[in-house]
Image 1 (cartoon, rainbow, N blue to C red):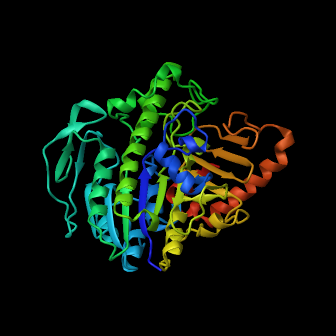
Image 2 (cartoon, rainbow, N blue to C red):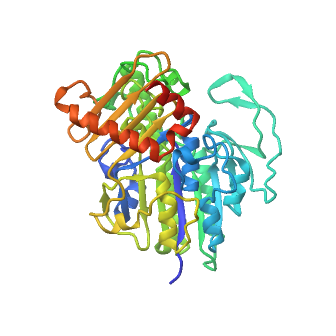
Length: 463
């Protein structure tokens, strides 16, 4: 049987509940909706949060290595040679590998992962209309320079960017998809390919073509049920960069504007994704291509009084995850618990690729085919040195141990309170559940080697 191609769309800061077909009636995502109908959606896909304020950095390192949070090189700044990447594994198995867009885990690891690429951004964020990018360099040098360019967060200040060129005037979502389309059009079916298309959207600065901005009127945007003017206590990340994007206290009007622009960016990237799918159709490759759609982390945008992703709430740790293509059940949704680092062994399973010894994720293929298959009953989350959490199939426990602050505990019934608004930690009726989850938190702490990490050691010394 002919081995399937893989096209992997990875978005930046897109939380789980931003897809129309999965229940968000306020957003327009017609092309992602088609993937939902053509494939299997993991409605409870997660990241374990992160060891850095730039949560996407460890998240992406986990994705590409299949390794868990505390088994990375530091916070994911680099991927060491002993951690085989997804692109390496597929390349060694006979796939032609291509990468475009955001890469946040060191330049040497990019060339180990991909034999080809274009419009590569080695950075965490940038101005979507002026992206400093590289053409693929087979030597891996990537040492060419360009003049100063504006810092997108502060137009009055300039910072140095190293790149081949500034892709000016083309939005980042169009840029990465056009690059992927060019690659697909060059393929001739003589070799299966893996194309990794890493969006910079919907990460701020939240800008998009005017056509898409006009689709969403901030005045009609509904605030989430857990909107707050501010977080009720110090969670250890109240004034990190993401939190400074909106005023304090959070106002309904400003929050609606952020949500409207966030939705518009997602609708725009959905449009560009559709162009890539059309290119696969034109080449007659769609039926033999596995498409993966996922996001690197969620985003609060006013929920719990927060705007970033530096928390263990559902809005920050749950992400979209869809598989569509040959061998994958169509129109199926599963609530099986998954982490993004499970994608690596799953794609190996679906393509007959050997799973490297360094991979720790779990193959999700059986969960796609059998609704009774569950790889996990509980999930572990950790943010930096100040938050730890665990959840089972119904309840979530979040513990806060912020330096110099009183410890805080939250317990939520996710079945009856999916927006995490009613803290049950002080309710004696839930004392047994609280004790049970605290025990599971300690078990997973040890299983994940959390306490061996400097940030984990700091948290647990205060716990």
